[in-house]
Amino acid sequence: MGMSAGGRVGGGGRRKRRPASEINVTPLVDVMLVLLIIFMVTAPMLTSGVNVDLPKTDASPVNSDSKPITVSLKTDGSLYLGDQPVTSDQLIEQLKAQSQNDPTHRIFVRADAHIDYGQVMQVMGQITSGGFTHVALLAQQPQSGQ
Image (tube, rainbow, N blue to C red; front, side, top):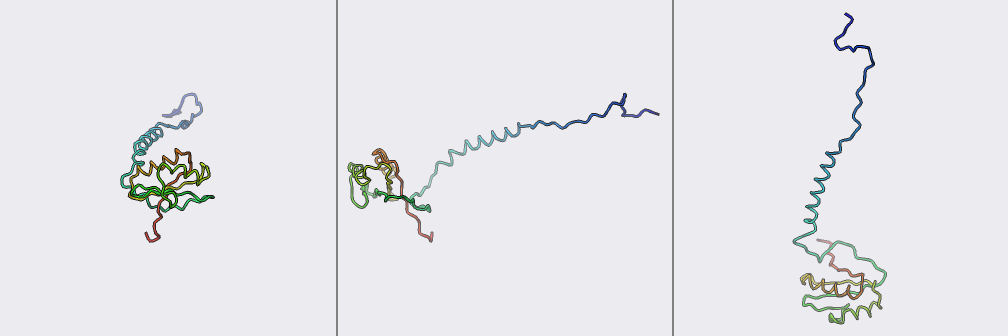
């Protein structure tokens, strides 16, 4: 009884199976494509908002070396440069005079919370078209109890 049921003829060595060294990347690509589609669909939804109240912020004030020039816009549409009333036709020439023709001088635009957003953008556009590059909006900081 020299034969066994599972023996090999010839007595050659046993061959071991090597594990597959390839990585299956198909599931990874599938997951990445699904995530890409989800982010592409949701990203535009995140940029649009409905009930926005911009006049208050917790941000710290901007520090600058020179004293900024403040342009204020009241509810009735009147413009003020500092605390002096100014017309929209005189705004750019008076800004240039106060900034000594420095287009990098910081200009802050303040507007009443209940004013039309288009009027604020029109004033900011007028200032930037006058050559000024550092134009920013000011907002009221809330009191510490809120």
